[in-house]
Length: 382
Image 1: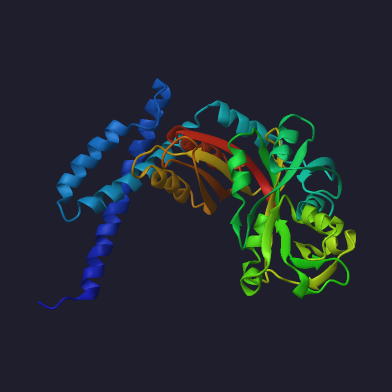
Image 2: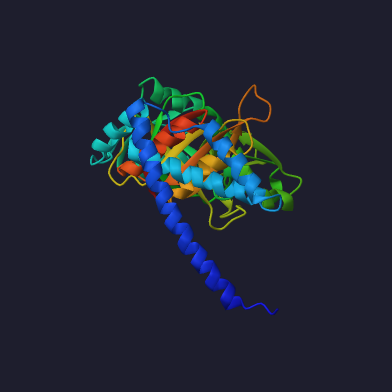
């Protein structure tokens, strides 16, 4: 018998109509379940019930389809739990905190502030700070940890830190420090990075034996070092610190990779206007504060969470975000110290806590994750 594609599609359409009708009926019953749980004070998650259903439907599906049936019902459970969370509007310290922050979200970011950033005059962190604040009073710190401490201990209301680069990837040191400090992100900005090779006036490239810069900048200029294998790359705390070091050094055979501002600031000359591997190189910076504050224009949420150490745990958390139709713009994993092959995850999501459904999603993630820290809801400047 010859197969007729259109006839098969007609049958599929009929089944789809039946399925969506049954789906609507099921979700109406889910709403009734949510009302019952709210009355009795029961949690949304019921792993025993989910396991019972999975075992029953996969058995009915048969060996060929049991894995697909499991995936289908896991997705259906996530959709159902999202709907329950929206219906319940559960109260917790997190939801109360988010509702309070959402209530003040019409305030604008201050134009004047005392801001901590790592490095010295001419650093890219300084340029990013001047983008975020029109009139900043900058307090330069020796390390990223010092920036976190300055904000956490109230020395400065704000701090600016690099978090990722379009060429070299994430600044892992900052991500690792996030686990140790109490802070919230209130703004982000992308800062264009143009790496110049700077040396003392009159020095030629063939004289250079060592180049100093921040480790991220050195990685972003790998092509230069590949072309000059005799030149040693030495990491320093910051590109501007490296430029100042090269300017003060008695040696003529040392150069720094830093910005054009550092060239004029420290009396250096450019041996090359661009030694970066990528022509369109930018670094993303975050502005942190101690307390959760949501300013006008906030459209991105950052989370730090740990998932249960079992198959599918991260997938189920991601499904909740997908069900909401939200765009996940970053997922970073970092190993948890003292635990073998267990990881903490950092999420960036395009969303706003002004939306009650998003606040319900945050509560749902809090309930299902082993740990969830709401890092902030903020505007990202381009």
